[in-house]
Image (cartoon, rainbow, N blue to C red; front, side, top):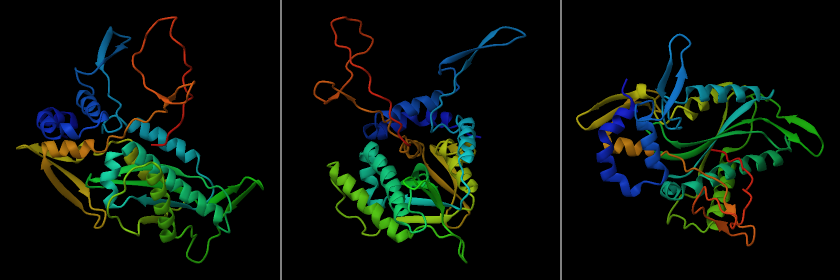
Amino acid sequence: MIRIGSVIAEFEADFLAQFRRRLSFDQPQALKAIKDCRSPASPMMQVHCSDCAHHLVPHSCGHRLCPHCQHHESQQWLERQMQRLVPADYFLLTFTLPAEWRGLAAAHADVVFDFLMRCAWETVHRFSQNDRQLQGTPGAIAVLHTHSRRLDFHPHVHLVVPAAAVDEAKQRWRRKRRGKNGTYLFNEKAMAKVFRAKMLAAIEAAGIPLPARYPREWVAHCQSVGSGEKALIYLGRYLYRGVIREEDILACENGRVSFRYRNAETGKSEKRSLTGAEFLWLILQHVLPKERPAMLCPCCGAVMAIVRTRIRSPSLTVVAAPPLVAVAV
């Protein structure tokens, strides 16, 4: 097995020479974290052996793109979601940004990814409210994906949604009835139209210039997934493993890296080969921006920037920290 840390160590110089100007603030940090993961260069953790003495062992980096750090977190996440399943038929909904929007998404990732999640959920919520059998608020487990199986930049969001809803006003729980062909949830083309309209409105309100051309018809999928367990296992498989499994890195030689992936259309395994620098860029495209709530001035409401920390002075005005806000990623 070829470790991704060794690929970074071999091609980091070439990668930085070629892509340094395109990197965001978070991407070099991700590169260093994964390269140093569980190596002598990483921070040390002191452990105690009951039979001999204390030892120092290197920390794992814990970065979400690191392929050998996240198995435990993935299993814990899956167990938590399994406990939240309700007695209803489940559907896997997918909302995808068109190819013409990928440059905009890469340039404004923190804003566009947030809108992508929000608009997908608002679309599902609207359809559930208007559905004759549901007429209520649905539940959903949403996961953002930024890559295709070939690891190309391909932002889309998956939502695992039960065919059920809660009418809070009447305190009623409603499920959709099964017909001859099973349970039907929502029309894909209608959802795509609403999702497109919401994304356009959100981007325009944010003052971000839209691409010169983009399709009038967008893509949304609605697939029946039974009780929901298989859909959660599918999402959990990708949620914490990083972008690529190290078992799928086939070769790192002669200045190139080869890896395998499964073709979504044929179901067959295929191989892709890139230069080492291009391979690292393919991975780092999927580093998510670290979002945090803005700190607002208590006097005028403007956004404040942190200049220095750990300053002790009674002459400074003490400002209470803003409340924590949960952000879906």
